[in-house]
Amino acid sequence: MRKSGFYLALALSLVTAAPVVAQMDVEDQINTRQSAFTFAAWNMGKIKSQAIDGDVAYNEQQMLAAANAIASVANSGLGALFGPGTAMDKNDDTRLKPEFFDKPEKAREVAIGFAQAATKLQEVAANGGDKAALAAQFSEVGKSCKACHDAFRAE
Amino acid sequence: MRKSGFYLALALSLVTAAPVVAQMDVEDQINTRQSAFTFAAWNMGKIKSQAIDGDVAYNEQQMLAAANAIASVANSGLGALFGPGTAMDKNDDTRLKPEFFDKPEKAREVAIGFAQAATKLQEVAANGGDKAALAAQFSEVGKSCKACHDAFRAE
Image (cartoon, rainbow over all chains, first blue to last red; front, side, top):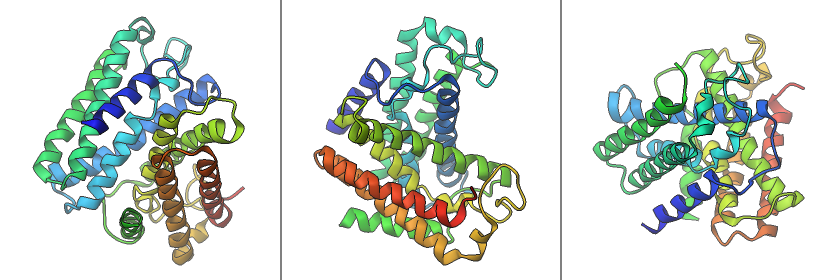
């Protein structure tokens, strides 16, 4: 619980105000957040292959590394990469809907949902690596991804 | 030491043979590894800003999150993204020199160097977050990045 509390506090602090790095330009923000999600998706794919589909042999160490990667993305302060001017109304390289900026409470909600689900995935992977438990929490992380996509990502 | 030993074993296992996910095509491998490095570089930038340059206020939680992110990249099994046909002699989207495939021992050496340096960065950040210690280990991680760039990345 202590660890979860820490990550939640961290997620909150990062969704809100505190700067983490000198200001990045719009293109860098978009490219970096897409990179973060690509890296997370690759690691989600490992868990899917090994814990859900079973087309790759289950390997606890690899599952822990994958969960660590996903959690590190979710807790990395992604909010800093969603600055003004980074939606699709002003840039062709993103599918972020402009209403993202009209709904800060919803944005905070989906960011926290991702951070909580991914942090729990990491805990499940670290606590013995039970395949069924990991598969179940993988599904929860997937739902947290979808919650943001449904709200803020164009088709 | 136990944790370092674990990560070293993990890095070794991932540099060598074990598949982590169903085979990805060449473009996906290149895009995903570039994403991983972009995500790591963003997090390196946070540590540089806060622990070296001082242009952003030092925040221990953000430094730990950044170190976790860098370590998760270094320990994610990047070797799986450097498959046959992913060097610059066969693809315009990468600067990976073809000699990467002629020097597996060197490739392993730089991969392990990155994993060890990044895992130690994570340990330093987790053990109290001393700014000077973090700055010193940041420099070691930077050297491990450079070792690979010098060996295998074209100008």
